[in-house]
Image: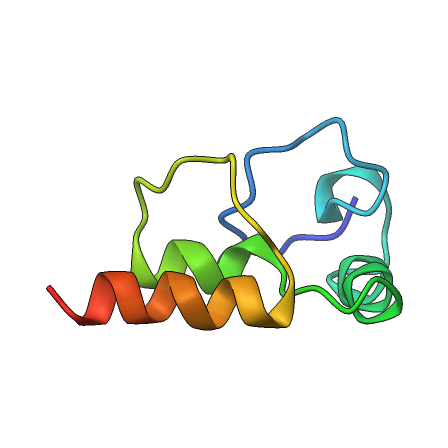
Length: 71
């Protein structure tokens, strides 16, 4: 198991989660890039208490930022 102290993902069932292998963040980043998505840790940096029901696409992240930063 890789130690990634800054990982804020709560989806421990995800095979790409750093707690499920010894490759750190690489599988998560690779999965998200392949899906043209932003990893949840970017969302949680902006709003640690975010709702997990999000649009994780690039455009979805831009909207998420606009909504949070506009406050």
